[in-house]
Image 1 (spheres, rainbow, N blue to C red):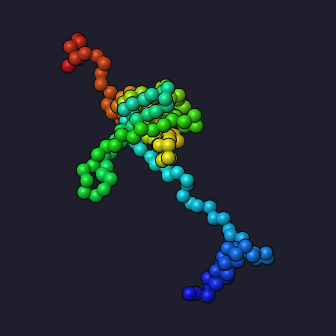
Image 2 (cartoon, rainbow, N blue to C red):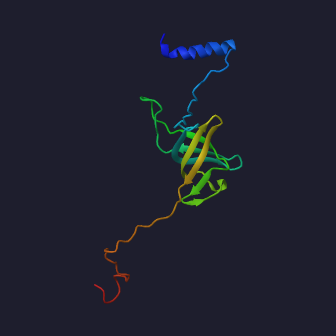
Image 3 (tube, rainbow, N blue to C red):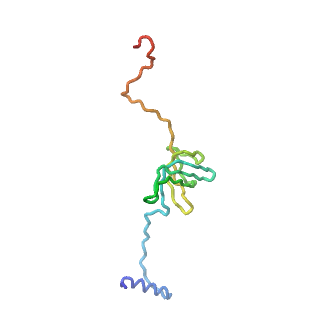
Length: 152
């Protein structure tokens, strides 16, 4: 037995006997844990189910992954709960849960809790029709038809 544990052993014996009167202890420093109480995760995928009344969203991962080496990769479907504190965006604009639609592409940050996966933030892709940009150095096509007089 090491001698450095002797004071702790004496204090334990005195506490058990109820004879502690003037035992001095050094205060323990409280160290903040670097790990949050609930682990946060992120997933990118497609919305497969929305129930705005129950505030539930199901998202299928866009990338298949294997939980263990050697297993076949699968695309999981996560059922997530929206809270009143959840930040929901479409592009950069805030939206309500009622505006989420099936087939929306989303990036979700959520926390694993004993009650399930709770969404911290959800960003839906802002679908915008895009056309090919015209480059400034590209030659302009004539707007007249080739069959008009004076054209060869």
